[in-house]
Length: 443
Image (cartoon, rainbow, N blue to C red):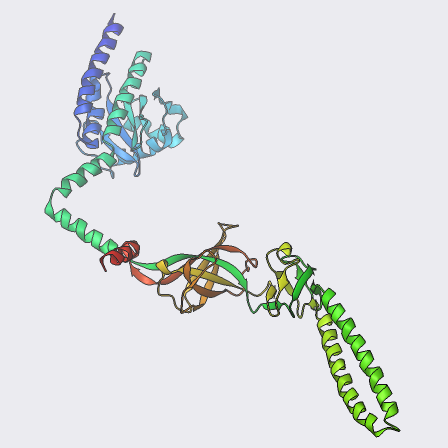
């Protein structure tokens, strides 16, 4: 019957303690309630509260208004809590299982039986352990009440977590004019923080000093002997022009030359005995020379229908089918021979994103094929006048070279480049585009 009465008294004490926990306005007040007023639930001789957060410490002791961290007893408790934590469920501490030094000093500081009670909660913030000690052993009924008590105190600790207290303090301070002035000054200082002005622009890896292969004469491309991005050696055949018309012209010129040669031979024989034939021989000689020039010119054109590489490199063009059977005029660009080891970065800075770029400015290239790879380059030149790009966007052409000693990107690689100018205040960096748009409206 006494056990039942004890359990009922413990439950009534737990209800009363719940009212005190809900009335606590700070973690310090909650700690005082935990170590002193828990006697309403069950009896104990001493109690200590350990808070495990950013700075773990003994937060409260029974019968003591304020904890002195330099006191020997408090320092001994710190060593004890660090040994028994973390505690997942209420349980009796096995003193014999503790380190020998703690077991040896236990009797000097605490009674024989101790109960470790974790203050658990589901949210963030500090967690704690309540240590209750006394001479009599702890019963199973008291252990069950201890679980409810730990949940109650843990919920109260969560409700008083520092984050909510910080918001309360902040709201209280913002009610004063002094803090408004401080906030305005802080915002002003943030707005004046210097940052690097930058802009994004599409960019591609282009060859340095490429060799442009052009059509040597008017005609139709018969076939290309190379494919895009194919390495070629000097003297290798690149493409052929259709030679059907030129062969016919060469055959006709050769026939005319042979005819003129025969007429000149006959005139030379007759000129030995006939003075009139000497005049004809001079005319025949002039005609022969003209036919020889025509034949040589046609033969030279016929030899140029085979276009060969004048130097080694990589053939840069879009597609073989774009040129096969296409009519070209003399001087028309067909492909480019480039050295893959000599590349540069060409960016196209839109007019709307223009910044004050100078030679020597930094530039970072992010390829589309590998967004986690970056290549650093240095600006060499910026076009004075903007020109339309292939996407019909008016932009300034920016040339930059890659740093020596690093890996070079693949020729023809495309991506996005970030261009850096000087430093400007943060407020200007944020409002630069809106101010430019507003100025277009307001003038």
